[in-house]
Image 1: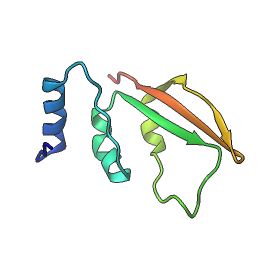
Image 2: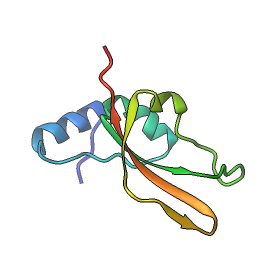
Image 3: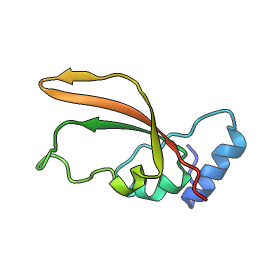
Length: 94
């Protein structure tokens, strides 16, 4: 296991040592907020229902404005819940 003192160091290490690999960030709301500045792609699942009691963290809508929906992987319905995983590609802001 490798540990780092900062997120920036971990990302730089990954770029230098694994340039042909994708880096995936999996975490909770705080982790996503810390990592979003490094993201050029996002794989996100949208739901057709709001979970008022079960979920306390949602993906920030203002971040979605910096990305464009590119492809729909699949669409599935399970017990009346539509699951829509999407691929978002970062927009070049200038």
